[in-house]
Image (cartoon, rainbow, N blue to C red; front, side):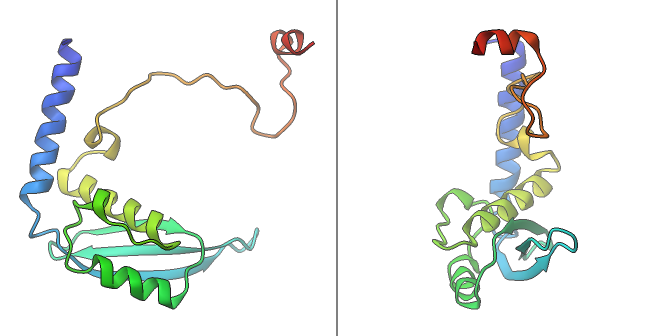
Length: 147
């Protein structure tokens, strides 16, 4: 095992121990949803906030949810540990936002960026395959391969 991998393993274990050791303190006490609409694009979405006994709050975003979905999520999540994000299946459009909010709480509890809590960086660079504006690539190598 390389020295870098050993350091990452030690950090991951330390972060996991910190999050799991505080299981009772990070019990979910509130689940709130705030419907939002962007002023220019008029895109509608919901911001979900989960609060814990320890005072931490995590945020997540999803598509619009109904009151019934919110009530179901409250029944499923309240009283659970925020560290049990993998076993929390809400089963509604609010599910991805709840998972993101719980991961946010774990990152705050560990005082580390979430990518480091989940195992650290895996790449140093990413190759871009297309332009962001939707236009065809201007790279001559890409055009010659298409022909």
